[in-house]
Length: 501
Image (cartoon, rainbow, N blue to C red; front, side, top):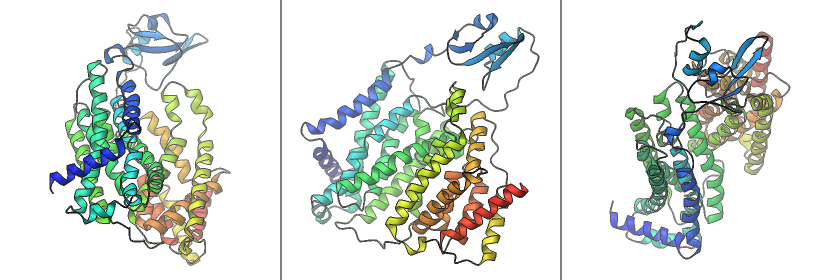
């Protein structure tokens, strides 16, 4: 690999995108988004206030740092009894309430939930602003008929891809590090391992973007693909890694991109092993994506079989479904955790389940109709005995134990996500049709049985992975000749669940 051609292609890409007055738009927008995140707010040492609300006892108000307002730990007097409303009562408040004579000995059996710092936003924003530039990097070359000149020059495909990757990874890294320097100079953050993730997150995002647009013929097609997939991957992997970190730091660190985002948020401060694992995982994923892009880079991409099976197709479609379910089902619990339990009560899980099913069904129908794939048509091709056996396996899998969770947010999130796996309401037909059409009707035909089952597990049952995987594999087996047998098996399993528990 020669550095000269790589640097020349990188400089050529940057000149093409950033030339003239119009080229100033991307740097200005990036800095306009990053700098306020970096410098606005209070310094860490000023965040020692303990918010409380309601009918706060005097001895609690006397605790140093307690500030009464509309958020935080709630207090209420009912018939002379002091009621406390909180997911976790801070030791300072508990000591004041006990007045030196604790009635209950409290022992922490698990660490409190960790929240990534503002530096996570710096990495996210710096990566998100690259979507447009990356989407036109290859498609624009084909539209201008300049890719042929590059391919016929004395450079390899890998050097072309590396040059384009270096150009936009460097642009994102410069923006992220500039904002990081501003945050450090203003005293908003402290130096740490999070700085190592600032080039890794944009690097993996750019590699993913180049891989997604490697076959696009113009800028419009590339932008369409990037805007649909990249935000979902950024948000989905980050959310998945953060949820996994509540009970397994190693599992969170192994999530590509998500683990690097947690490093960027300084989640593992003082734990360099997990940070190193996350960065290595993301670096390996970046290398694999760049290798795949270079392999498929052609002047005119060879038309793929319209109904060809690619396991990689499960990643964007699975991430899209995972982001949808995570935001609409367990997502509202964040409101209660942030001090607004009334909002969680209003955002009932069934409303999220119906909304998510309608969106998933709409996307499934659109892709179903556009594909015109005979294998996706709903027809019964499996014997009834096989369908009944699959229904029995699915019903039995719903009784398998999930992951051991103790965090209050995860307990509530798991309860809401379970409704998506075994819905027990009038919304059940909508839920089942939407999921089966998307995962067995569309995704399995595009990615294969096992990738579709893995995507189903991550999206619908991330906290019950064994049940989700068994369910996905069993339904995929009977859906090899059509989605209808899987829908029948799922309906029978749900009937058994309601009848037998």
